[in-house]
Length: 85
Length: 149
Image 1 (cartoon, helix red, strand yellow):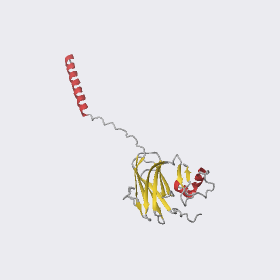
Image 2: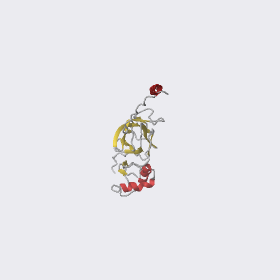
Image 3: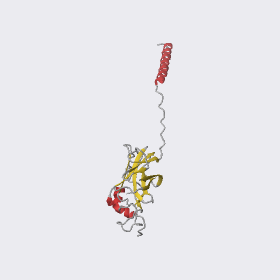
Image 4: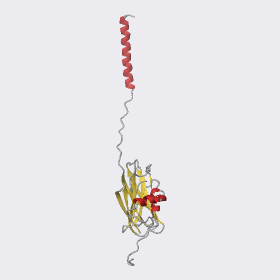
């Protein structure tokens, strides 16, 4: 690693949240969406955030086999496909 | 009863009936106006504001684009229209394009709505320029820039 290269800021402790006055649809979306991996993410963490269930990490893994070889190894900036459940 | 008196009575009855019909006609309420079914408005974002605090309606109290290193950054999004389901996504980035957070919420808006995204950090925010881009499903709906100083 080049010592002259400035160190990238660490955003792994960022907590994101949301809410709305609009109702939530009764079912999961029929279409898939994209998710950009951030520092500190893991598949189970993303599954918990998007599906509400960390155990659904395998759904993400299977949908992204073309870019994930090891489910314990994902990289910030990777754009994952998030299929509808 | 003679034929003549019968005819007279019949005339009187017919006249009364006419008067009665005329009167009842006057008492009838006018037909209610035909209500036009409003055309459904497609979902769209009408405004986005950044700020440090939200009110109870999820609106930013004092819009700003300048934050301190310990602030929580709120993005308030006003929308109108209906959609059976729409994904509202906020992609937060640091100046060089580094992703700070990528958050999404799935909604089924029926009318005007107010949505919000927020980010906070346990350690101080690195000073610099940031941006947040909002997507409705996969389409960019707008971008806001802000500074942490």
